[in-house]
Amino acid sequence: MLAYAVLEEGESTGGVIYARSAIAARREGANEYADGDFSYVTCHRAPWADAYHGKALDVGLMILHGWHFECSGCGGRIDEDMLDEKQIEPDDVIGHQHSAAYCDARCEAGAALEKAQAEHVQKRWLRRFAKIVKRRFPDAVPELKHAYAILRDGRHVIEQVTVSFDFPGRQHWPAELTWRRRRDYAGGYRRRAPQPHASNKPTWQCASGDREAFEAYAAATKVQPQEQPL
Ligand SMILES: [Zn+2]
Image (cartoon, rainbow, N blue to C red; front, side, top):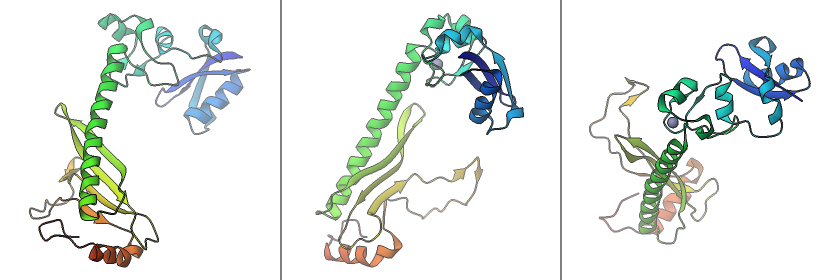
């Protein structure tokens, strides 16, 4: 098997592909990078990579042969100039051509820390929502379904939380307590005038076909007046 550098021409994205012939490599590359369009890819021999057939091809080595990558940590471009500038050895670059790439161990650690912080915030909100469900429906078993936190101005803020729970007579999918940060802006322009009185509280949701069953469940599990009404 020989190594070929196959590139999609428009975006110059691609990779090293191992094949028995240039035609075979080009066909595989076209499928991978150009939706099967043979004429959109270029294919050149990459003898420097021959020895890595069946092994991980390190990003650091590829950079020395003219490739560049985007760091999954800092988002910067990893190429030979960057390595020179930041005095990073090619061996210190983390990743191979089919994995995430990082400038070095610091960028990888930074990304891991950021992910852990986001998960911490997400878990805290999921537990909070599970508690709200338990307060309103004490016999329910909340499932921590989905939460999404993003980094904003240096700290993680919650954007979306959804906890789901089953209820008697349910035919379709479980009910949910869900919340999403309201946005006045979407895609950079104002889509909808902000509604000053619209609340942005968590909402209870169920399948429309289950509405009666859910309302009956809510009525059967009486709430104190100061608690959140359905
Ligand atoms: Zn980086």
